[in-house]
Length: 114
Ligand code: 5GP
Ligand code: ZN
Image 1 (cartoon, rainbow, N blue to C red):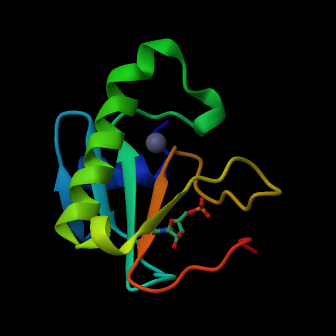
Image 2: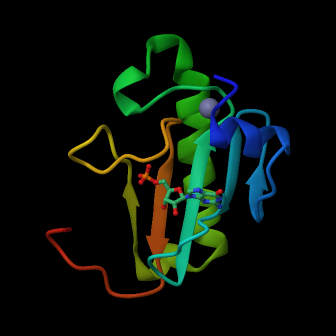
């Protein structure tokens, strides 16, 4: 767990551009943004991906969803629309193995995604 980049961001050992934090959640700007708004929302518990969430993680998942709603509204995206992406595993391109939700907005988003 303690080789995890996002755990080090939560602990402050690695700097990040924080946009929101509470007891369960940390959120920060993606270092390589793919849209005018590109924020990563992560649980403050090391869970590898969405496929590893279990029932006892419910407080973290509930808090992540509340944080997504708040951050999206704070950025005016509740009106304009936004997308949430989470990647699991190799074929989806997951590169950091700490569950994270990409909040993307501020431009028209294409479908299907690449
Ligand atoms: P994934 O590819 O696993 O779904 O998403 C990982 C995301 O983390 C990528 O969008 C990447 O740009 C972002 N990222 C990787 N390293 C860092 C970092 O050190 N700081 C920040 N803020 N974002 C990072
Ligand atoms: Zn972690």
